Length: 160
Image 1 (cartoon, rainbow, N blue to C red):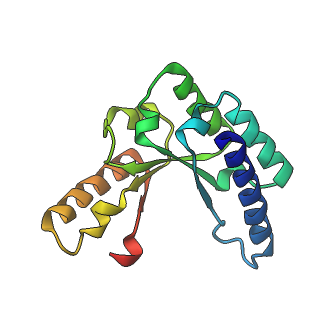
Image 2: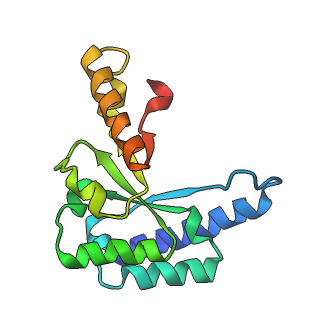
């Protein structure tokens, strides 16, 4: 049931975000929508078509949708997963590596896969004010995306 449920959630979320986009008085900065994909949803063969259909039916712009995929799922690494990422990218969707630093942390995939964002996991960010080594680690992680022209999201930074 997870695949149809997640499809429904994505559809409702895109529909609501589109309404919010339409109500905005200024379009200087687009309203972005970030959605986690489960491993099962990401592996589903009709994922790209389903997302394309959702974008079409809701009118939500692909370039303002960020799909978050855990690095563990990305590193399963078979050809179909890589193709799936590239198909999503050709739709104009942005891709984020969720919970970066908690799974495989293989840096080679950052240049192989078409990702736009790295999301630093909350435990790293939560220790910034308590542990000097956490600051060093996060600082090092932040250097990497700038070299690869990726954007960074720090989970929990609002309370760190």
